[in-house]
Image 1: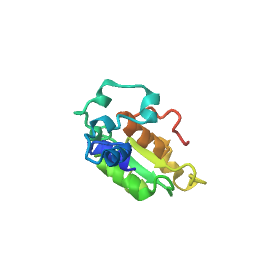
Image 2: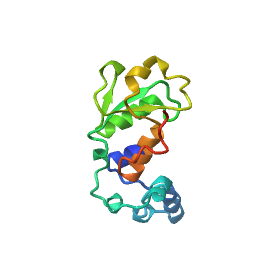
Image 3: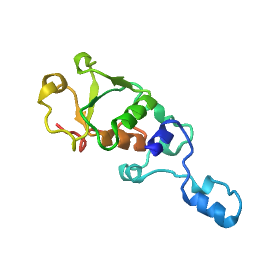
Image 4: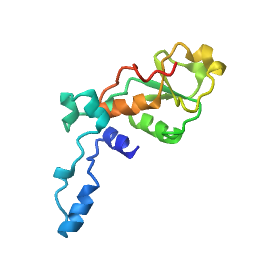
Length: 151
């Protein structure tokens, strides 16, 4: 979760190997050759020009998005997911009674047994796994829902 937060907040991400190299050298080394440039999701989705750019602002990926967290969450935990959503400058909708148009419902498929309680309210909105949100951060763009839809 710290990785995703670092991307959203434009922080430099350095491999743990940097610490070992500094200890081995007995001095502080430049971190530039240990900088993390991406993860396996980013590589799998294919490179985009702006992803490697240091001036790209990840916090704008979801600035026009609205999210509702449905049900219980195991991984990532609900509080951490809420924190990331807020860090992404997206709107967090807190009640199903006032769903704005275009709201994306995030639900943990491993924790949901039934959607009947709120089915009439949420059925007009895409219901996707939180991994869509995290993978989108990794890729620097909102991905297509294909493969992430729960219902």
